[in-house]
Image 1 (cartoon, rainbow, N blue to C red):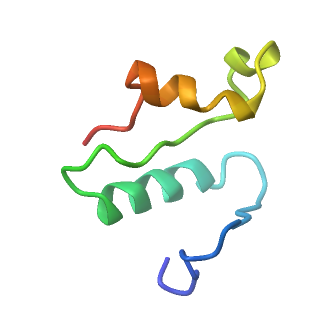
Image 2 (image 1 turned 30 degrees about the vertical axis):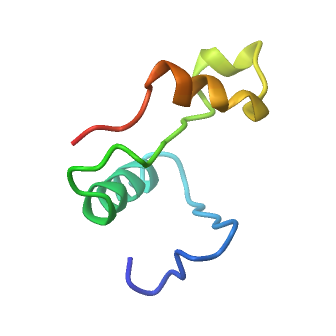
Length: 69
């Protein structure tokens, strides 16, 4: 976690299915933004994105779909 430059505009976390990528990212968000709902985690494997585009992210902000501690 400490070897990643989190200030980069794009960070790629890759690995086989089930190795803990999602858990790793959610743990980082909870540590980096404690008691703060300013982080948004999107799982693009969700069926919600089958008919929607990722550029519609403002919908998540408006509807309050933010990660909470």
